[in-house]
Length: 291
Image (cartoon, rainbow, N blue to C red; front, top):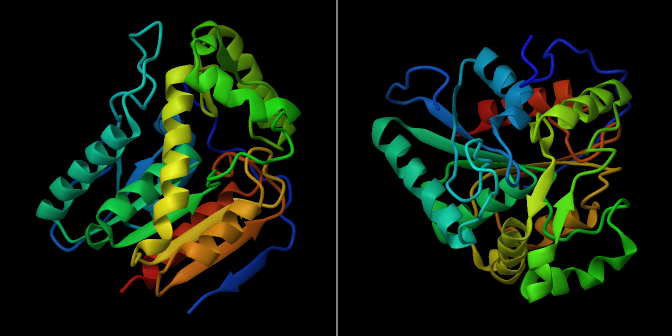
């Protein structure tokens, strides 16, 4: 087995009862007219590895998946130092990918985790009529989880002043994972590589700054959009973004169909953590319900 990915056959270590409330597809297979395609958006400065379990679940249900490497957003293996493009460029790139997919077949659903969820929201805010559905996983509109350091209020000094030239953010345990076996695997992986299935070992200031701008943009603009059907999945113990993020989406995202599920046995990386089987199933159920 390659060290580039974690094993897909790890079984969840027990699933707790879930809380649910309801308000009001690089292509994995050849695309055909009329199909639903799920375009997968990984987290900040990371790769499609973050979404492998979800990818497998969606493909098993008969849907097409497409993963994209976004210039200046995705991790670039050939570069020793990662440099971000503007958040507007991230949104524009994904929008153009959606337009290409729509020209070849029917529906396109955006499914993003972490910052990828924010990029998906950004595309929908810019051009909501283009998107047939949204899947938002661990959406970090506000960084307020239990593992965010108390001095987070000082981050703007690093992001928007010359102090940032001397600083980068290093990922530390628990790496978004409650499952100790997978967390240990990621920790071992990051000792020899710059990228794991849970993300990059280091985030540069330029990426963090553009993501901060994206967060501010979404908070300011998303309430004015007539949004597509949306599924939001979030862990109750998310160490990066608390459930307040979910509540904000619920209150401000104007969509005729909003499904929301709170997962009780995971941290931020719900696509790899204990609830990953349910995450995949919830997404498939949502896709099957789309008109």
